[in-house]
Length: 142
Image 1 (cartoon, rainbow, N blue to C red):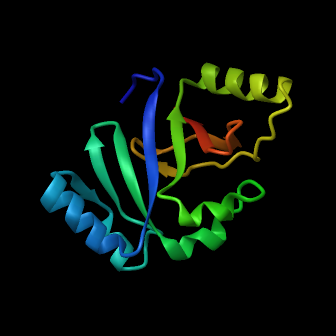
Image 2: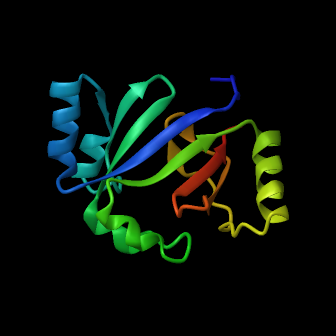
C-alpha cells in the first residue's frame, strides 16, 4: 500500500481469552482473524482481527498489561476495554505531530521501530496521552 494519508491503524482491546475473542469476532462479527495460529504457537504476543484492508483490532491478553510501560502509568489501562488508539500518518505529518506535542510540553515516548500493525511493520512509532489520559500511538509506514 502506498497511500500514506491520515487514518486509523488499529485499536488494542484487552481480552481474557484472545483465541476465544478472535473466534467471536470471526464468527459473530464477521471480521477476519489475523495471526491467531502465530499467537497459539507463541510466535506473536496477541492475535488481531481485520476491520478492513487498513484497520485491525488487536486482541491483547490481560497478562500483557504488565509490559505496557511505554509511558508512566500506562500499565493501569489493563482494567479498561481499550489500551490505546493508533494513528497512522504520512511521515511528514508524523514528524510534525511529534514536534507539536513537544512544543506543547506533552510527554512522548521514545521511538519504536518495526512494530506490527494493520499494514505490516511500521518504520517508526511513539506514544503520548491526551489531556484525559487516553493513550495514543502515532506511527508511519514507508
